[in-house]
Amino acid sequence: MCAGGLFDLVRVDGKYGEISLDIALEWFQLKGRLSCGCSAMSTKVKRKEEYEGRIKQALGVLNEVSNDNTTPRNIRRAAKSAMDMLQVGDLSLGVRAANAISILDDISQDPNMPPYTRVKIWNSVSILEAIKD
Image 1 (cartoon, rainbow, N blue to C red):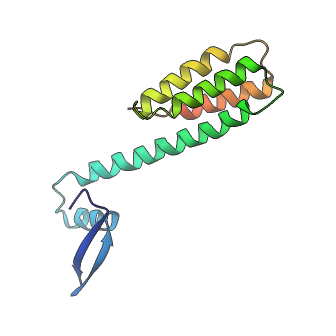
Image 2 (cartoon, helix red, strand yellow; image 1 turned 90 degrees about the vertical axis):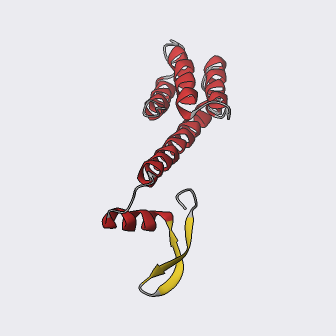
C-alpha cells in the first residue's frame, strides 16, 4: 500500500472512501503505526519534485540566454549545451546538474559576455547547485 498514490476503501468514522497517501501517512504517523518507511519515501519523492522544479527553472533562464541575439554565439551554444545536459534522461538529477554547472562555469569567465547575461548564467548555476544525489 505504500507505493500507491491512493488507499482504496479506507474506513474513516464508519464510512469507506479514498484518501491520499499524504493524509494516510500523516494519520499513521500520528497514531505511531508507521513502520514501512513510507515517510522516507515521501521525503524522497518531495525532494525529487523539488529538484525537477529547479531544473525547469534553470532551463527557463538558460532558454532566455540561448534565444538572446545580443549574446555572443559561443555563449548561446554553451547555454544550449547545458540545457541538453539537463534533459538527458539516463543520468540522475545530481549528475545532470553537475555537468550543466561545469559547462556554465567554463563559459561564465568569457570576457565577451554581456553583464546581464553573466548574471543570468550565475543565477542558473545557483539554482542548480542545490541539487544533490
